[in-house]
Image 1 (cartoon, helix red, strand yellow):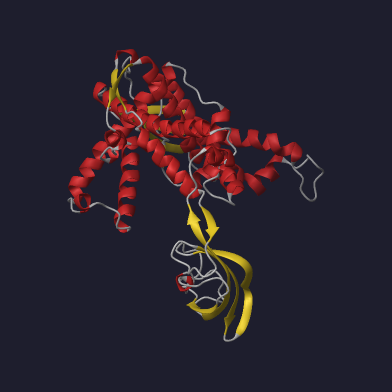
Image 2 (cartoon, one colour; image 1 turned 135 degrees about the vertical axis):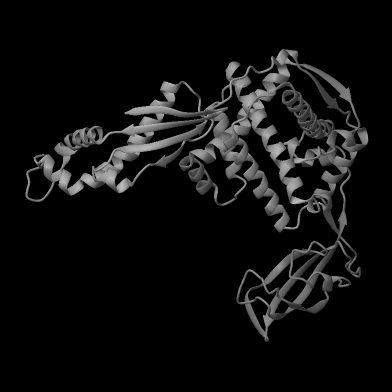
Length: 449
């Protein structure tokens, strides 16, 4: 194998690689010798097929397979000998016709192009000074959260027998649904509770229950939506014969000891503590996000080195694809939608460069600090991802297990967060008290990511 470095421009490298016909022939003969003992062909004893016959029958396919492996091996050897760290997968440009190489008529010659990782010394995390905004939890926010919890545990108490149902009431009914006078499957129920205004029934069903009272019978005329889940009912008109059993009024429970114990807790004090912890977790998360943004800004400002063009282009293409999806869906804000394309591309190119630079800096700081990710952390992230797709958890897990690139994308944010936490533990972090609105205000721009 001959390797010649043909280009060195910044972080870009090119190598000319050649494997002669003679070397290829020797490797093919060695491969045939390796598989000969397992070869079984009609007319020959097991393991006794002549190498010349194997070469005649399978030479081309074996050579094709061997070339694929050889390109990988020679690439790795060339990179190792050059003592460079690739920043991307090598790009291969074959010379001549591959069929001639497979048939043993030509050398295997190709050019390999790749970007290499830049050499730089990351800033010492101990020298960084980061501002971390924090906010106090107002007492009224805890009370408001308790009030919402009470609303989620709404109870319904019977109204008087002559009371008419109002919006928000729960009506207990028996009903039979009919189309063209015939009852249809799944259209009947007894003792069903319908909360007027929740929109859980067919459009128009709940609204027609306003004003009914216990013991009343009423026909409800509705039309099934065109996109109804049952095709045999979609778009059809139906009549529901309804008998009202009871009308119940919504009652928000008092947030007291009885309410707390009804939720399985020991006391109202414990409920308040749990609610405070939950809100504190939200505040801490927002505080950390702001500190991380400040940290990333500081790291970006502290480093200036050449970036692998391929990595920047790949990041830009991902950002631009996201932009085009948002544009097509009509989700862009007015300012961004009206910007000239050239201006947008320049802005997103800058954001792409920032992301690549920060990714390299965090990776190098993490490498020096020997930050690692445990398999348990990866599995927890995989389970969390799978739970986003109820009923398809197994398929999601199998997808990640079979796709190294997808698994790498799952690992990346875990590693990034661990490096960020490592830096924040070493840097000087000054807490600054801000309002809740300031703490939860969104950072502007894609470069905040």
